[in-house]
Image 1 (cartoon, rainbow, N blue to C red):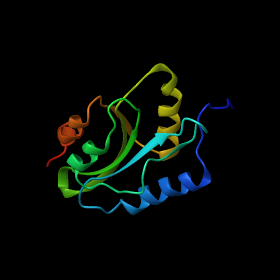
Image 2 (cartoon, rainbow, N blue to C red):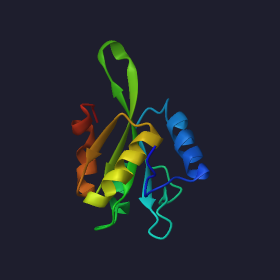
Image 3 (spheres, helix red, strand yellow):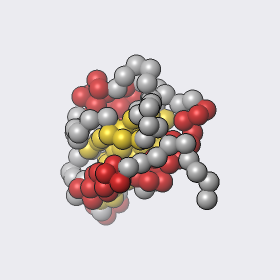
Image 4 (cartoon, rainbow, N blue to C red):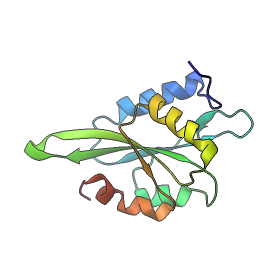
Length: 133
């Protein structure tokens, strides 16, 4: 198995699991922001917030620093079943971050990665996901 440049602490892995399990029955979108610590190369929470409003989330994204957004979004499908899919989105994508994106995707056990370049893209996330507002 190859060694990754980026890593997760046990505490961060526990937070990811808690987020995944804690949002499984949410009626609306919930998101958490993760970042790469420049010094330790650790992927960790940017803050301890769980965002439910996509506008508030968009306001928290920096202009030119990569962030991962772990998004749980319930989608209503045929026969009124609800299915929860976790997404990782990020606002900057450059070559060296490809490994971090894959590590975040696999560690957080997300189903799909969506690339965004501006916080405003979050306002239309329901359309991208095929859901409703």
